[in-house]
Length: 345
Image: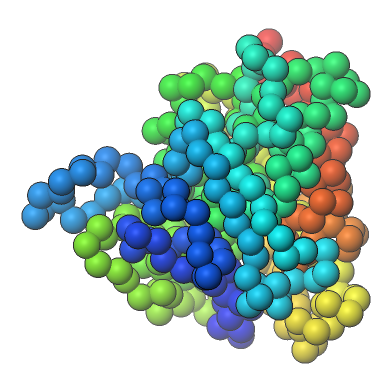
């Protein structure tokens, strides 16, 4: 049964490969910006690697200070509802490779960084409709709270990838807060035998620089295991305390209502739908339980938006209505109060 789940996920998240032979997010196969060929997705890679330097620890990030444009291809659009329009979508990054909000933040504002996978990244959204942009804009215009909301999302990023980014890239920047909003990729690896350390080309934490690996790790579990997710999120909480960089957790919204023309087209039965949805619910439940146990502030976006069917262009990626809804859910969940509390501590 879980093979059906993986096939459904792959229909949406089919990767292509860039010049580094590393799997990437869906892009227009007809051509992408030249900057993609120089994307910085690995940590500690020499420009002239020796014969022994054939592997690198993966750092899922965008190149710094650049603009990239993506247009969703036809094969991708075929798995989406009409709220995703075929047109170019721009993505601009700052000097650290974080996706910039639009409009840009005021100089000198405290920074809040969102970590996560493609839900946070929001590649196929216009800059001003991504939830990080909407959050920053609403906070400033309606609440008089000026913060820089930076987007460190990256397609296929698991909580392990996010932990690597947090430890090696974000801690030295000393942001006001970090919000970890991961889950979709974690649900995927929960059915892989080697978990977050699998050989799947999208998920593997160590990559080979001189050759490619098979697309999917063939070793599967009969049932999902979330033990490693729990351990890694506990490590996140411990690292936050140790390095005095405040971290919040957020559950990930996803489609959970079995109704509508698009859902009927994508799933033959309610059972098929539930096989996809249930692992994501379980991952979000781990996020809640670790947050409670470790005393980490939580934004329960999944619970707040559980009945919404109008905020996604597929099963979990946000359309413009979703960007607005998630931003307002964060504010409703006490975003300003949580920031002030963490600053006082």
